[in-house]
Structure formats: C-alpha cells, structure tokens
Length: 298
Image (cartoon, rainbow, N blue to C red; front, side):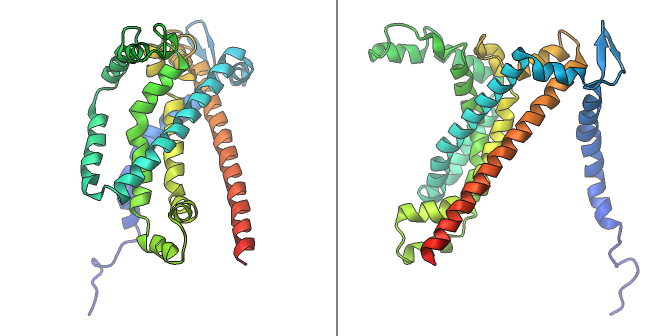
C-alpha cells in the first residue's frame, strides 16, 4: 500500500495542535506575571511609576515587621487549612470509594452543587451563623459550654479558617478521590491474602499509593487559601488580616503597583521555599521508613 504525501504525519502537526493553547497561556498567564515581575523592581514617586531598577521594594517587604507578620500569618492559616482539609477529606473519599459505591455519584453531585453557590453569599451566611446571636453561640450557651457569646468565633483567625475550610473542602476532595478510585484493587487483595491486617494494608499499601493525590490536594488548598483576601475582609477583623489584603490595598487605594508586586513575589518565594522544605522532609522520612522495611523483611 502506497501512502500519499498528504497522509503522512507532518512534523509541524503536534506544534499546530498545542500552538493555540501555548499562545493563550503566554498572553493571559505568562505575560501578565512577567509584567508585574518587572514592576516589582521599579519605584513610585507620587502617583507616577518610575522605571528605576532597584531591590528597594523587596528589601522593604522582607524587613518590614508588618508585612513579614502578614506573610507568615497567611502561610500559617494556609497550612492549618490544608492539613485539616486532608484529615477531613481522606476518610470521606475512602468511604465513597470503598464503602458507599452505590451513592458515590450522589455524593459527588452534592459536592459539585456547593461549588455553584456564590462565594459572598456563603461568607454572609457564615457571618450570621457565627455572630453573637447566631446558631453556634446559641448551641454553646444552650449546652452550658459558654456563659455568653464567644468573640473568637467571628472577626478572628479561627473564623477565617472555618469559612475557608468550608469553601475549599470540595476542591480538596477531588484529587484524593481520584487517587483512591484509580488504586489497583488487586494489590490490596494481595496484601490481605498474605495475612496483613486491614490497618496494615491501609498504612503500607493504600496510603502510600494514594500519597500523590494527598500531596496535590494539600498543595492546591495551601496555595488557594494562603492568598485569599476576600474572607479576611468580612470575617477576619484585626487578627485575621492576611497578606492578600495588603496586596489588594497596594494595587487599589494606594496605587503602589511596584510595592504590591514585590509583596506578591516575596510571598511566592517564601511559599516555594516552604513547600520545598516540606517535600524534602517528606522524602527523608519516606526513605527512612523504606529502609527500615527493607531491613525488616530482608
């Protein structure tokens, strides 16, 4: 059979397929980030941006007690929410995959519905629930656990954490659910046939094999919540403000784009270093555990 010239795959065909997507990514993602990265090295005098290259903005952000406190507070909030999300979501996803297979689609549908609700409406609903006359304070006082309304429920870090946890739990569910769903059941069955208890099967087979989904969920939620600035405005109060609020103020009311850009990239740098440290510790612990297992079964 003779293949015509037109039937032969062109060398350019893969590039033609990914070309439009690449162009869109460059225009709408890479280029804006690059522009603001350049802005971070400029300065502002009055209402004018001066194209004078300097590290002054980065030095100011990283040496300012106010901004460094906001950055590390944001990272602390993001870490707590990411850890809580994984702890809450993993049993839910595990139950969906292995226990309630008949209701799996229904649970996913209910999770999807929550994503369509308006973000601000959910925040205002939580404000009503956590307010002095809200449901939570009423339950605490009715149960005798509190003498009066608890101020730490609203306009505090815990209020921000609770609401962000509620908002982003569906996003945390999907990576872990997908990892568990794609898990090879034969491997689990083989471990059980070899005499491993259910707890040991989970600890040494299920959890390690689904760890990529856990990591994706953790990083995704950590990045989303660390940069949130809407929730702290409505429920954060003085102690709940985060670096996202300072960035929004610089780009908005103060119109200091160079300093705001420096805040963003300083935060990104610190987040990158923190995630790198977390992954390094994880790999070290994993290698130690694997070495002990090898010595045990050798």
